[in-house]
Amino acid sequence: MMGDKRILVASPIREKPEILREYADSLLNLEKGGIKADFLFIDDNVDKESAEILQNLIQRLPGTLMDGYSKPLAIGAVTKHLWDIDTILRVSEYRNRILEFARDGDFDGLFFVDSDLLLHPKTLIHLIQQDKDIISEIYWTSWTPSGPLYPQVWLCDNYTQYESGCTGPLSPEQIKRKTQDFHSMLRRSGVYKVGGLGGCTLINKKVLQSNVSFTRIYNLSFAGEDRHFCVRAAVNGFEMYVDTTFPAYHIYRNSDLPGCKKFKEKCSYKKFESI
Image (cartoon, rainbow, N blue to C red; front, side, top):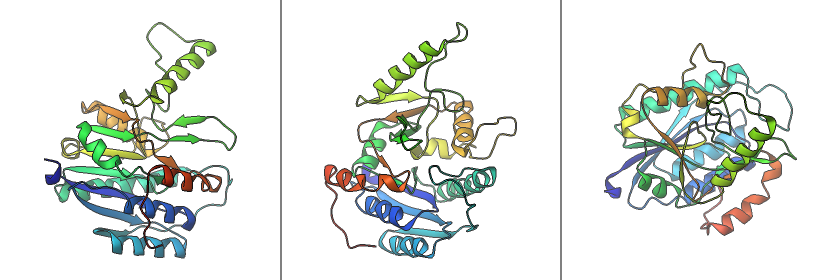
């Protein structure tokens, strides 16, 4: 029964205040449908205002706030997220701490929601209804300010967006066409099997009871802790899917903030007292 489910909604948090406020609004609007949802945040903020926002949020939601390392961010380009090895290792440890918390608490599922996402209110209920080992709700991102939109899921390897097949190397034209086919499929509402995912991911109890983790696999050079999690999940026999019914909105950079209002209006967000 849906009402019997205990779900942990969690994420490490290191975010700008203006984005974190939108994230808080999204979680306050998340429909539970009788699910017992608990929240867990690891506070890795270096910005005092962001830390205060997170403390205010956890007072409104049932859950736990853990301290992170709060190491200062390096100065870098403003057009992209900094994702160096130290950051990857730190976030991997945080996500493993969250996995252990979910295991120790005997939760029925763990819903990772990155702190720069806005969700449709029906997202959690819908993902639970799909009854998959691991499933993400899709979102699309322009990785460069003027670049095309790409999904946060992939089919194989590090971030390959096309089926490579076993017939030898593909031409650039074939790769382009296959990538377009994959993206076109994901634009249609449905549930699709993928080889990798992240960002907005529901993990069921069967997976939690296994030895999957975000720890780096020493003989793989893949960047990002989610890649290593997905490899471990596949090796353990778990299948990964993406749902495209209620796409999330990714606030990847400040220029994405104006789109929040339109997204929230489209999803009929309720108004809560500002955090």
